[in-house]
Amino acid sequence: MKNIVITFLFISLSLQLNAICKPIVERVEPAFWWAEMKNTELQIMLYGKDIASTEITINTQGISIIKKEYTDNPNYIFLYLNISNKANAGKFNIIVKKGIRKQSLQYELKSRRTASAERKSFTEADAVYLLMPDRFVNGNPQNDAVEGYVQGVNRTNEGARHGGDIDGIISKIPYLEDLGITTLWTTPLFDNNDSVYSYHHYACSDYYKIDPRFGKNEDYRRLSDSCHVHNLKLIIDVVPNHCGASHWWMKDVPAKDWFNVWPNYTSSNYRMTAWTDPHASKSDLYKLTHGWFAPNMPDLNLQNKLLFDYLKQVYIFWIENANIDGMRVDTYPYNDIKTAARFIQSIRDEYPNMNVVGECWVKTPAEIAYYQSGNNNKDGFDSRLTSVMDFCLKDVFSAAFNERESWDNGMAKFYSLYAQDFVYPNSNLIMNFLDNHDIDRYSTAVKRDVAKFKMALAMLITARGYPQIYYGTEIMLDGIPGNYEGHRFDFPGGWVSDKRNAFSPKGRTSDENEVFNYLRELLNYRKAHPVLQNGEMKQFIPENGIYVYFRYNADKTMMIISNNNTETKELNTDRFSEMLSGKSTALEITTLKNYNLAAPVSIQGKTVLILDIQ
Image 1: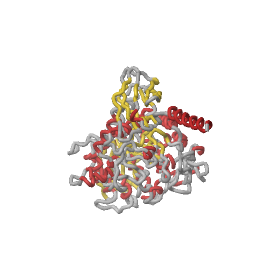
Image 2: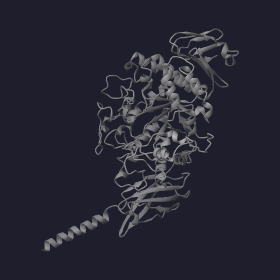
Image 3: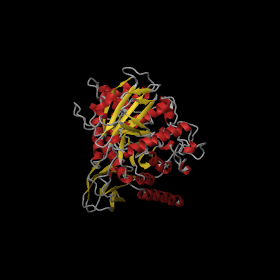
């Protein structure tokens, strides 16, 4: 009996000691911050079993507790601190007490980079390269499978992970610089531990962690450093609308209103036009903004101030920590747009020069222009997005070169679209593209016709706005129309086992080399000549399948002639005298052929001439 009592007392004492020794706070986010931030308020999310009843104190000069915010879940405290200008970089303690238990959390304020707040961003002078990290290059096969992560690599399955990573991207930064790229945009790199389709990373499971199958947090900084060494800027993909079903929150939701919830699963109606429709019903707007993007993407409720502050700080953290140069915002109109505008502005308040391009997938220039900051919208709305993506131009590119010329088809589509540029506050700061990770590969739109493909590249690079090149477009990478995974093929040569290496001229076909060399020449010419970056544009109504526009500034005039006919045409230049007066010769920048503008210009079918007027 005595032994039983002793055993019972020992077990009881052990349980009490374990309870005392177990940390009160199990999770702290963000793990560190910076001194000398413009916004002196810092939210720290503390998570632990029943921590709402704890006492929290800080005794450090320059740092004070503003407030402690609680939710209906007692396992969370949102601690708001004031980091005054008297606070020095270094470590300090946050003391947490719960009964006889005490925990000292060591927290660090780091020093900011010099002129961090005034960092420069991407502009209309840049050419952006978009890539999906999982499908680009596998630079470190050792991280293909990671313990605790559901999906490893299976390249035979188009919807599975294929193994691309940050090391692979870094290895190709010199390749991008040589191509003429000046800015890199990767789809998200945050942790995504979904059991299926985790490769795209738009369903985050931990905002403060780079997915270990891509690399470590410090690898993101290495990527940024490599970009900057090679004169590239780096854009972060911002996703304010949803997280992933595998997010650790889902096991213990911070608050009942943390997500937009329904009695039964309800998807968004995806009708972003509801925001600009003067006759829109409230129910349609509600379903647009509160419906879920997909069953595995819980819809975030940014009306919750605690979540708003948390997510705002996530992106400030990464901009500061990884030295990011710009932002692209995913699915902007799926949020309440007034809240989304405040969200973007709260980040730009810290980085006033930061440009932000928004994905607003609508189908008319007037709707797109509604989302570019500075527009004189009738309702007074300002998105705080300095740039927008031109989905209308993408549609024109997909159709025009395949059509017979008519009043409103073929080249007339370009003319009609650009004629509506009056709706934009800044038509130079519009992102132009042929394709991206959500739409059909442009190679499939023109059925791998090299002539049509090169026409599109020429008009993409010489148009107002700035170009975005989707990885593989430089080699006319193939795809499968109408299929997400069909838009996201691996780059040939990104894996050691690949049969060929299309990063090298020897590994490319003759068609691929023709396209690559053409785009490389165009991009590097654009990089060297401001006239194609922010010069004025003048266009002339297409006639007989030939469309002519000019880019010009005080130093240079460029004449772009597009012949959408299949046969060679002669173009009389008299009609363009307002731009050519006193100028009679020109050099075609890709062929280096001289042209006499005083005589009719001969232009082959399905060809674009890019003439540098001498």
